Image (cartoon, rainbow, N blue to C red; front, top):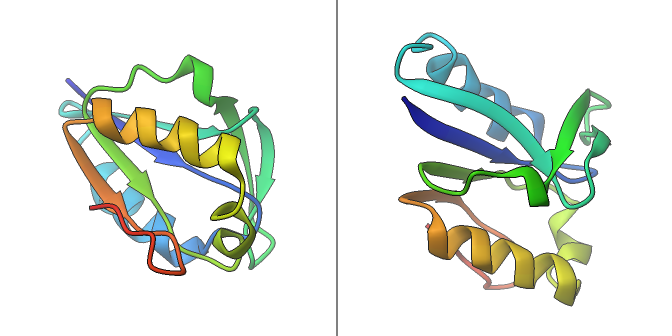
Length: 107
């Protein structure tokens, strides 16, 4: 089974997360789907969907890392702690899907 780790933050774009999650969720024998944020807890999308997350420190980083877009990325690109931790996670992941705004791209 492969990890499918979804990175969330306040004001993430709901469709960027739940489009892929709908597909991956149909493959429970192949993927272990989990949601994470920097410090864990409830994270709210731009569309006001709330998701309970685990902290980045709990991620088993191999497998897939999904980083959605959304208006929350506009402040995160200047958050040095978030970017540093995200960079470490991305370097350890087998596959990364996603992007941050202002020219900071992963994937």
